[in-house]
Image 1 (cartoon, rainbow over the protein chains, first blue to last red):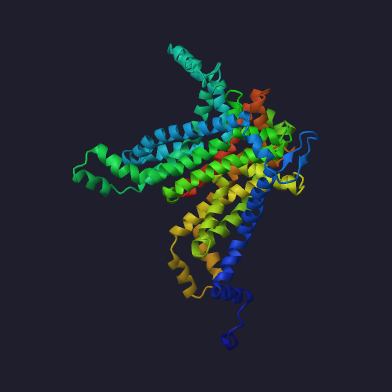
Image 2 (tube, rainbow over the protein chains, first blue to last red; image 1 turned 120 degrees about the horizontal axis):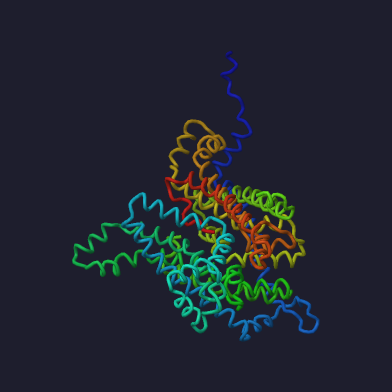
Length: 312
Length: 217
């Protein structure tokens, strides 16, 4: 079979492959075009549509949406009712973020520094499983847990601690008739649901703090408190900021949790949902949705300064 | 389970959720892998902007994706359909696949690819016999997580579904106005089981690294 020694002309595949190898830009654009079309056109396009909608306004007499650019809708945002909604949501997001950081940091520190391999795996799974299991089911279970006939009230009753819950619920502003109908309840559920988003970046950041730096600090005469403040905390801070981006942003936009558990005072998400749905005022819904974008843009700018993106 | 399986409304919702999750995951796997390959290999102008664009759908609150898509559908007068739900879901599923695959790419050695080329394989053969086997488990893990995420998603869906009912939307109506608690409990357990299987599978495939970590929702 001497004919086999004659090289066959390169197949179409091989020529295409060579062409791509010789023109890396062509390969790059082939790789990038589909995802960019999707995210650039559909996602960014929708965000621009949102911006456009927020500049329209609803005519007061006819109730129809007028498709002309104006700032009428943004003026509506400044009314006390809408201002309250924005302030309430931002305060809740801030409180949840702060509490999540206070709980997540010691836990993350324990996981990285002290936990055995086995314990660490258990804790890690304990953080990840709730993160990825059904959001609605978790909210539903919390509704049952916090209800007046729920397990918390029952345990408090058995331990003769009902007065503690009553005192908590009697607090002006954040209290209410029962845990599931108060800001305390909303806060607890937000904290539970978003806590993994704070723990994971903090663990990642703490794992990157070299032990040698901690030892060097001790060798140079710093006491443990000083080492913590001057060495560990600054190095782990980007992780905390990265986590806070998630907890803050997720709390700002959530409308399920305050709707299911909490007093009837609306949050931004609920207001957006109500306006676009039954009220049919899409421009106001769009303008309200711009508020979290603006807050997050500000937040992300500060976070970038603090180096949080390397820890994401 | 008997009650649940016998209820046509729940069965239809479950079926719709599974279909949406399957199609969105498929789209996300293709788009996320392409994006990861582009960001991994090349240094080009606007690379940071593109990675920001990919993360944006999960860095911004879900309600923004939802209301933005709804505004766009409204302006272009696109009626709500199966595909409007899929568009919303695929948008935030892309980043999950992207994160998983990019992490794997970064850990795999470029020398393997060069060796394959040196031994005479063309680009497609290298992809088929070297790159794909190396990244298959990361792809599977990313796909599983994307599936779980889509199956469970409710915030974006309420804005893009119109009158259609996915399983999470059915549960949400039950949560707001409870009228059949025993059935809801059954559905809740069922949903946990369906989402737990892909998550544990994803863990299994990424257990020696913490790739799935921080991929976020």
